[in-house]
Length: 61
Length: 473
View 1 (cartoon, rainbow over the protein chains, first blue to last red):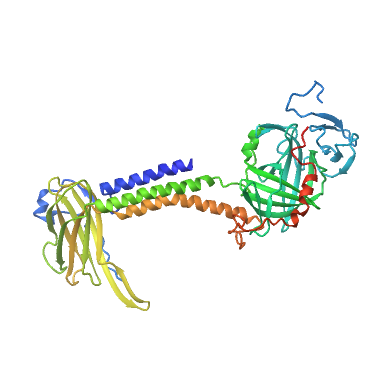
View 2: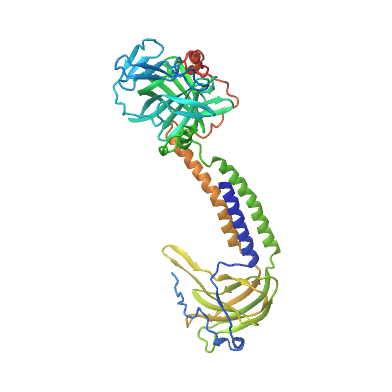
């Protein structure tokens, strides 16, 4: 029973691994935005990134 | 003999007698086989071989002091044969001031003879008397027996005293009698020797679960819960350990096949690379556009690598990968900082000058990249380069998958080791014992050294009590 469950689990893991690599999944956080106006190409300052409000680290030890 | 005529095959003969002391009815189910019978009312131990039931001993006990979990007279099926429970006793050992008691049930079948069930803390053993002697290896560590090709490690030696008896026994049972008991284990079996003077009786037990005993005797209710790990209790997943590692090895082959395949056949294509500089004191719009560039092939990731010349500085880069045709954008903000210095602890560094981020599942198409750098005003000019690579294998997933595959077999193996640790912690050879891990097999060159323990045992075994299975009507 345990062996059968493990074999099933193993195939799920390897299947997920294959899909992740084949489809190019990533663990990084990315925001998707739809319908960005074509004018951004000529006027990049018109685009408002979702990360604009990020508070930057200005540290050092 | 039954008053209704001859008993059908397999039914023990039952004879009713009366206790010579209290007059209570005595039921003798193994007539002709029992050596002693105990009156359940007055606790007289009587000589069952004597027609007048000679009194052998009287002991003081309450009837309810220790009532058997399987009532006397209950019939059950063990290994395909019907057995009646005809006797019950309790034995106790004392180890380091602590008393440990177990129970023995005497079972009888008129054709098969006697066998025994032992019970300790919900752990059961089906026990029979050995027909031949095992070979003893006293120099093994721990000492071991070999019987029918199987090695049994010595587990515990103790002086066991009988302190409660009920029913019939195929030996001269006495309350207060004491024997030296030595157990050798090879789960799920164990071999026990019981030494009285020069007599040694050898028996073999095989572990049974309480549920199996209850089923065998068709008992009501539930058996008592097994407590702890018993000396010959098999690890419930012992068979699974090997098979799971075999499955793990097979998965590992597939894993490496995938790793090699994705490493060798991934595009890993550099689609753009450019060098830039950023002056935070500059005026005007900081954002700019990189590209366009074509991403080809199947939907896959796009790795964005940034290398900088940071020197006790930071830079924040807003990236937006935008599909020129569909307007689909992938926004990602990356903060890169690198600091270093020297203090009372010595030299230190913090952060990195490089950064990598993978944008997932980007379809093919024509894209451009919007870049918007930020940093503190007054910092020197920061130089940085951007590289975009298409279809790069993400090794993180291989690491996660490897761990996921490894955890179940590792966990089961750890539990198995822990189970053995708990088992041997109760033995004369606890895990700290230096020789406990090198003696799965007796040394090949070791002669069969039958110790003094065996010196008289052959004869003793032949003469022993009348425990033998050949004692059938």
